[in-house]
Image: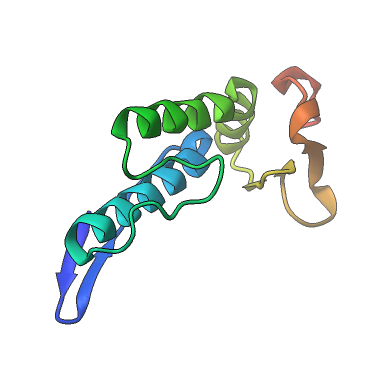
Length: 120
């Protein structure tokens, strides 16, 4: 979504839980590409490892790699199962937590249990 305002514009987009980083990169790329075309900001500015605004094919390849790296079906399964149990789920880049307070449990993202291993 893009909304024009009296002093500029605001952009927002939604993304599934397992594509948040990729969506952030898409948004940043689109913003920088817009600045380069509309405002005349130097299009060569970008961070190493991030999509280049001046090369759409390369940018798409980089953005697809970001999205593929985020694909975590085990995490989605746990999130959906926890939600079915009416439990809170917190996710960050390092860990996933299910539940709140003294009854919560957390796991490193690289060592997520199967739903059968969680003490629901």
